[in-house]
Image (cartoon, rainbow, N blue to C red; front, side):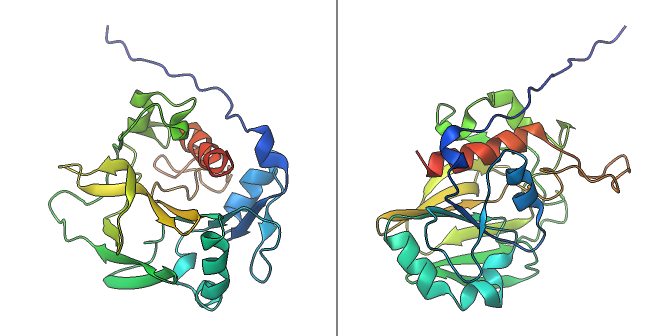
Length: 233
């Protein structure tokens, strides 16, 4: 008889410092907001006011929106003064090549890869340092298990790079030349670009009933909480 390994994941854990009301959020889907509320983290909408927050989470593709771009001066002051900004999947919605300003002096070049033979989507990612706080409660083997099993896609068919030096935390791709998570120092603060796909994997949606639908992913849930904790440590 064939045997299969069964992995049992514990409920993702939050951290006390995340429950102080210092997380701001700018997103369209509302999924990140709902997820954080489930852990007694009350994020603050930052469309017009970022006073009092120390971390801002920018949802999928929102960095390219008019709402974000018209406030880029405020976000520049926020980061350069010591704040942390997370850009979640900034490449979402890009079909060609775009250069996107993030704060004054920092921009991302986003380009969809031509990768017809390989499909373009990466399902395995590799950390530069498995002892980093980003991986608290996440073992190395779990970075090959997304969406509930081995081989679930997690990084899109894009290349994303910055115009200044970065600190790479996660790589993927055939030659590990795709930066999946990286950190950009800016002034006294930092910008973290995280390309691991969170959409549909943080909060349960009963409408998703298909075999290959996105579903709650405890690995990505814990990873996202670790991201926020890292920003506030």
